[in-house]
Length: 113
Length: 113
Image (cartoon, rainbow over all chains, first blue to last red; front, side):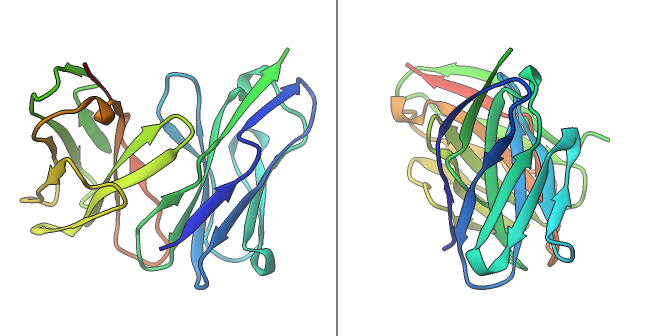
């Protein structure tokens, strides 16, 4: 089964700082990749997804992620965070044709005004 | 356009009680799954189904039963609730295809006392 690693579980930033969250997965085949966000007290929302093509993917709210196949990584970035980006962020991996979505343990991001 | 609907949103159970968490989707998706979310653990797969009449265990199936009598519904049963089952439960559905994404319900927050 695939596994997903997210580092630095707790991240504290000031507004306007840049954010980068790392995600590495272990699966040798083709994968679909996702980042989800969960705002306090709310359900999961899809931030962005990668299926194929351009490895730099742009999502909602100014987020982007880069797929580096050789590193089995799918890191999330935002150049300038806002207080409203305070949330928990989950990386998830789905093997192509399998549908079993595996999640990392999440990054709790707190943005200080 | 309901998507994935979970009921109830909140539930408190006493140890030993049984209950069923309901999940319904109106997108005719073949694949459905249940996850539990615990602090610092991410989302872990409990059970999944690739179609009516077919279910299988995920990562953390103990204490839970599922059935899939129709494409639309995928209930999760707790036969004898334990405090360790206090968690937030998410149901998801997706079509069975190569490039696909999961659609999540809004979650059920369950507390077992």
